[in-house]
Length: 170
Image (cartoon, rainbow, N blue to C red; front, side, top):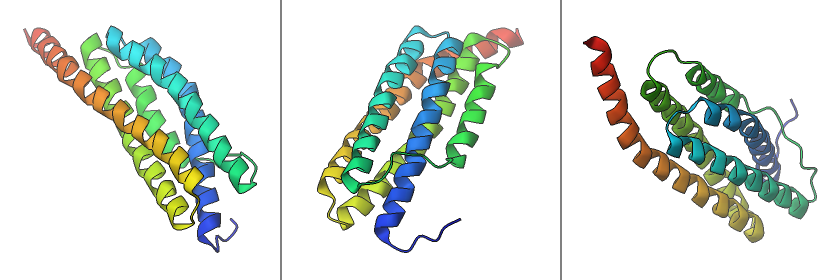
């Protein structure tokens, strides 16, 4: 592993990690949408897939601004989060329970992305890379909105999951 000797190199490293994370998510979201039974959750995953493609485009713009190749490095954190999400897609039992698990997995992904984009944006700001900081902030705002929508949806789905669990006991 090459040494990182400057904040600029660290920013590039972070962008590569995010690039790979977003590309992993592009592969996982259709599976999550297919596994979801709640229509609003299905739609949310499908919409976020399109948004995630835009996130990759923004990251590629950042690489271009920096004169770097738009390549990823393996994001092990996203790999782990998506393994948990994959477990949710094969969950046996009531649909509402699986949907609640899918929402939890999706929110863990969103929180990871919020942290990573916030970190990269802070690096860009410190380096005076205002265009990059703005692009990263756009994505950060979208990730925050997705998390809020998931939280709102969880209120309904969690009630359905609770009711389904009560029915299973009877």
